Each structure stands twice: as structure tokens, then as C-alpha cells.
Image (cartoon, rainbow, N blue to C red; front, side, top):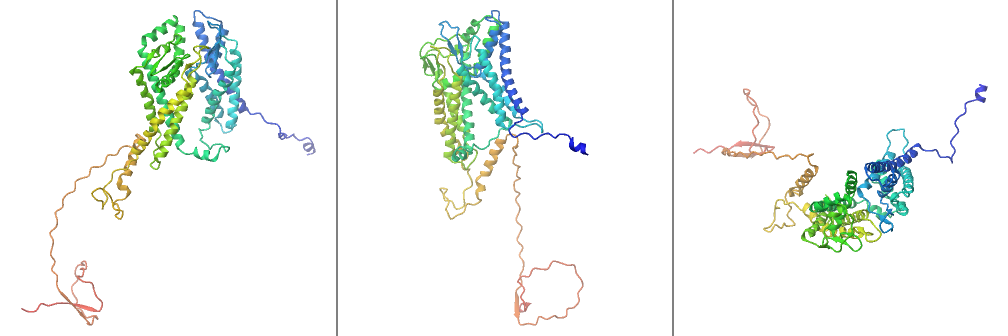
Length: 534
């Protein structure tokens, strides 16, 4: 016992208050962010190496191809590249980002953040959303900094200032979306540092409807832009084919041109939407293409998508028809801005439509800014739609059309149903205030109208029940009236009503007691009146 007491096993010491234990989950999130950036770099590196191997006349070795892949990865984040090998000797910026290429880093970063915030096992450590966001972002930005330094030795290095804010911006947005999705997309309260009126205002359902209406309008504009681009490519099919075949004669080069054209299709959709809205897009210094016409001769490189641009000169009725795209977008915003509730006022509906127009304008301004950029330092320094003009035009078109459409749809959708004419109404249909309307509110068809709207909104969940056929009423012949002979009686008062002996009679079958012709009276005796002899 003495040995056990003196030489007992040492117990683990309590952790010190100032020492923090390293979290393996946080380290895993940092590695996940770095892996997401590495996967994007690896995908582009493999693609560029394959094209370099298949090219019969490579300009540089594999090192130059890898430097170019790093530059393309930075370009996918919106970073401007600098091209030093120009005919004039002046470095030319390359700032037009293929929007389809942006999906690669966004999806990878969002997936890394979502996996870092998810928890599969019960005993696994769960990090808060802010810790996951910060850890994934640190790993991704560390690889981004290395890629920026590595791309500086290639043929198209990245602008350090542009990379310093474009790469973090894309990473922050993608990581925030991934963490929000991992936590179940919660719509919690706003921070307490905001004013109370702002926090209470954003709880109202008008803002969700405004986001839906604005997103619907922006999608309609992009769809209309895609339709315009497709129609123009089909109209200038011969020029597009000649441009595609004249750029290169080998299949690897044509494949590279085809990939670049596919990556620029979302940019073309935004340009088509800006063209339909009215401001159009710039094709160089002092040259703008609009539905009303295009002045000047732009100095553009040969590329298949650029061959589909409208010809220089005044507009034609065919180009003026593009104005129908924002008209449809305004109608869509007004339609989606109507709430399915009868108690909503017309002012609330108009305000929701106006907010939807604001959302549509902001979305188109952001897309226009992302799809444009410089392609040179002189004449091509302005290339693409102007973001503020495109956003203002989208807001103006949708505001003018959405507000009256939303109010009209609200009035038509919740118009009073035609019910039966009230009892006591005059010839003009006016009801006297003192006369109640027969049947109540359920006779006006409101319940049937709401049930029909619910059935249409549910799709096939609620089947349509056909009314059962009602048989016509069968006429019943009236029964002939039977005359019952009545006997006159005399009521005599003051008689003795005591019990009198009654002679026994034979038992008979029980019958229902007859209903007396007059009610019984206590203390009287009823005698039949005898007819006098004639």
C-alpha cells in the first residue's frame, strides 16, 4: 500500500489555460481549400499540355505551357493578364474573362467549403461556420498567391494588383455559398448592429418575392440575348465558317478555337441582352453597336463569334425587333411580383414589382461588368457593354412595365366572384343596407375559387373530381284530401267526476290512443250533443 501510495501512476495534467489544442478538422479544411485550387490548376494544365503536345508548331516548351495554364487559372477569377509580345511593342491587357471558365473555380471552392462544414459521424468534431470559412479560404488563397508568382515568368503574366482583389473576391463568394449550403441554407436573423427598422423590414415576404421577380427578369433577358446571338450566327453562317477555318489548319488549333468560343458563349448572351436593352456594347474607342445602328469601322480580330456582329450603318426593322426582349422581361417581373394572398394591397404589390426591377438592374449591371474588359491599350481599351448603362436600362424597362402589370394581375387574380343576387335588391342591383344578403359570404364563390387555385398550383397532387350526376326529380301526384266528419260536443261544468263502476269488457288488441279534438280540461265532463227529433 505504501508503494502504491508513493509510486502511483501519474495522472494526465490538466491543460493549461493559455495553450490551445490544434484542431484536425481545421487543418483538414485548410487542405481542402488548397486541394480545390490545385484541382483547378491541374485541369487547365492538363488541357494546355494536351494542346501543346498535339500542336505541330509549339512556340515554347512545357514550362511555357504550364505558365500559360497558371495565367488562365487566374483569368478564370477575373484577373487581367498582360501580353507583352505585340506589334507595337506596347504591353496590351487581356481583361475579357470567359464566364464559362469562371464556373470551374467557383464549383471547386464551393464543394470544398461544403465538405468542410458537413459532419458525417456523431463523434466527429464540428467547426463553426466562420472557422470553416476562414480555414478553406486560407488554403485556397495560399495556392492562389503561388500561382500568381509562378505565372509571372510566362508569356502572359497576371497583373498583381488585379489578382490581389479578384482572386479573394471569387473565393469569398464561393466559400460563403458552400458553408451556407452545408449548414442547411439557414435564413437566420440579421446582425444586431443593423438598425431595428431594417431588421424588421427584411423579414417581410416582399423581399423574397422581389428577388424571385428580379431573377426571373434577368433570366428572360439572358434567354433573349442567347436567342439574338443564335439568330445572328445562323444569319452570318458563311462568314462564321470562313473565319473558323482561316484561323488555323490543324485540328488541335481548331479544337482550341472551338473551346474558346464555347467558353465565351455566356459573354455573348450578356452582350445580346445589353444590345436588346438599348445601350448596346462597345467595339473599341468611339464605336458602339445598338439596335438604332452602328457607326464606325471597328478594328477587330478574326474570330467566329465576332463575325456575328451587326453590320455598320443605321438600324433596320430587323434590329429594332430586339426591343421585344426587355418587354417580355418586364412582363415576367410583374407576373412574379404578385403574392398569392388576398389581403395584400395594391401599393404593396407595386412596391414589390419596383424592388424586383431594382434586383434585375443590379444583376444585369454585375453581369455586364464581368463580361466586358479591355483587349488592348488603344482602340480596344473599351470592349463590351458598359455596366452602369446596361443596369440603368434594365431597371427602367422593367420598372415601367412591371408595376402596372403586377397591379393588373393582382386585380384580376383576386377579383370578386359573381354570386347570387341578394334578396331585397332593386333593379340596378343595389342592396338596401337594412336587408341582409341571403346565404352569407360562402355564396359568392370564394371557396370554389380558392380551391381551384390550390388545385392548379399543386399540379397532379390533387386530382380533378368530376361532379356526380344528379337525377332529375320525380313528380309525385298529390294525394286526395279526406274529409273527416266532426261531431259537436258540449262542455258541462260542475259535474261529479268521481270513479263509476264500469262493466267488464272483452280484451281487444292494443291500438294507438286517438288524438282528442280538444284539449282535456280538469274538473269538467264532456258529453255528446244529441240531435233533436224531427
